[in-house]
Image (cartoon, one colour):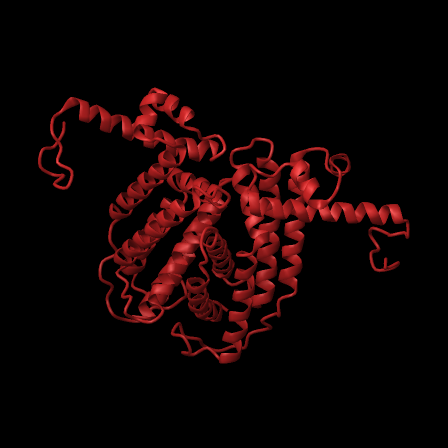
Length: 226
Length: 226
């Protein structure tokens, strides 16, 4: 089913060729992300992705003329999926005024602390899944590839700004208060570090304990600076 | 000058051949780290490293029979250098008892907060330099290379434990208090995330602000949980 009205900027007709083209493009992007996550940049070529997507190499090159085009678009795709996943998290809501303590269960109301913990867990989950794994491979490859670097750097800046904006909204944080912006940024840096820590081994037990503790620290930090 | 007495576990003679061999090995390790940081795993071969170190390929293979041997040893070298750099940081010293607030300059004594900030800055610096950049390249390559993965995973576990142990000592943190262990772990995850953020662009201005804010939060967190 192709909806007729809900995509005003890119009006969709019912032309089956356009539908097929969109579906092919989508399959290529998803295959590219999976390849990056599993094989790294070195093993990720247009041919490998085309085969995985069940698309001819010619069709793949029609959509993405170069390897850089394909994988940069795939990271855009990763970013859009990540944003959609962030938007699907339950918002923490506007926190009530009051004091909170750094000691777990100290002064923070259980509802707000729980809500913060849910947001923190949800965001950390985004940085420890296959989407982050794919983005990490491209990011690290871009450090050594002149053609990739500016494109990936610009993308990462956009993705970082979007992740920050949505985290602020989900946490109900007030960035006009000094320190709040950096508190949220440091938390997102931690989420990235946790994603890196899970690359070679299952780090989930340690990560759960860190996330629990840092949910308390963030709850207290945002209460104090508010 | 070769000291005669200060390396009891590996007694050194004055045999010039042994000295040359040690110097060659050291040059190869340093060249391997530099190659990884600049060229990534894909561009880092034994030949490239040997040429950079001014050593014949045969001599390089005498020291390190395989590519995996060379670069795993180079990461060991990175780890040892990182530990030495951590040990060279000024210790925070035993913190005094008392309350601290999350607001910058709130309740924390300026001396202790400054000392924590120095430790935090020093550790974050370790994760944003060429040593971390080299380790990151090997780490990400190991995700897709069966031969590398178990060796790098074991190394990363050792390096992580050592970094944690030294950070606890430098911060004067008491890990018998619930939450302190996870507070320190989360900070080290944040340092890793900051290292990743500086891979493609100069992130130092943002990083300075994050480090400043999180120094205040860590000072307060360690005071509260103590």
